[in-house]
Image 1 (cartoon, rainbow over the protein chains, first blue to last red):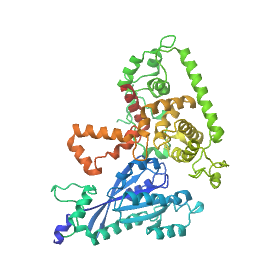
Image 2 (cartoon, one colour):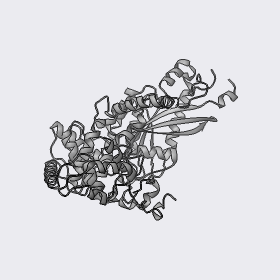
Image 3 (cartoon, rainbow over the protein chains, first blue to last red):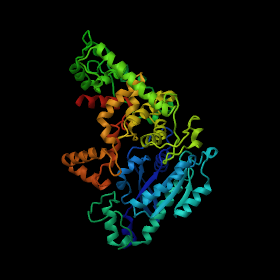
Image 4 (cartoon, each protein chain N blue to C red):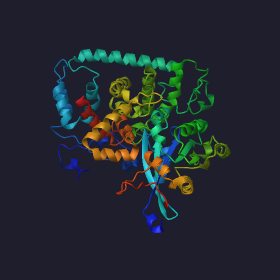
Length: 214
Length: 315
């Protein structure tokens, strides 16, 4: 396939943001997708979406990011959250140790419901609140290492690392996809049945998740 | 022209002042479209004229008005008590006074019962940090954040433990409820919201507390001055909405309504349905919030109340 043919193709990655209530999931997302922070934001009910794109290797890569309610009761509709997700951000609040202690539970949840996730990142949010920190950087790092996750401390409030974190996850997914069996028809079939594709092409036969030559 | 309509249209009174928004938040909230319209909106004068001398209410006439133009903010609270079915329009003033006093006593008795277990109830303060671990062990380290109060002995009673575990969740949501309204700058108003939700949760262990109930409860506290009256309006509203909040390990009540919505859209607009299927697998998850908190997040405070008034009339 020539370069010309590739230009029209799109990548669309589904990424989920999970973690305890009030750790800042929604504000991380609005900071990334719209460069906004709302100090008066409300608890998320159910699920909300945003799409943000970036360019990798001259190709447009879109991330469809699912922001979820933190309360455990909403986990009942969980399977739909995770279906087809290829990336995950597991967020805790560095000022509340209980939110860090619950990370393991969120990882279990993620592993149970999604076997398609290729990039996972542990995020310690609210790092602007250094004076009331309850979880050290080292604790975060070592948990991430033992669980095989990327790690980053962020602040949705002052923007620290937010873009970097999301883009690192997206790049990781991209490079995995490029390397792996993306070209296999069965994999494409699986992804499309998992409804990863958002954009409907005029040509019904072309799935948006496709990549490179075939 | 729309925003200054009240300047030239006699009926288009500016109602924003009834529910003031913090000045720094004005740009962040949806603009209110509801206007009080002469001859359409239920006014205080019309409302009071709908009662006979001993207090029987001509509900049909009132409902017709509400359907045409909503309720004027000056009387929303007292009208809502009838709309939500809290009082029988065929009763007299005297009968309703007796009932009201009885209900207030009942509420304050429940509140005292809860206060015995968690002294923060009714104190004007509330918790945002967990007070017990999931195994019922006290978490004393959170006592500083929790106003100095902490659980002293392990909790073994299952219902009590379930309740205690959710108190901090309620607190986390209370501080995030309608924060753009000046009303909630007053911490005692936040505490009232926490008290009512906590007491409701204690009394309804089968439903418990689910995020979104705070959005349903908040208007009641703003519209009704007496906390017990606000509780009973919330309780009434929840009778109609509670099934949406019922969760098991594998399902949420609201999914029933999502399924119905899906069927309706599939019938009236198959192309839209197909599009939504492509987006999220046709589960209509995007509508969870709309249905659980009845469009409170989509509209301004006043517009959502207007919508609710329309919905109540249809029931």
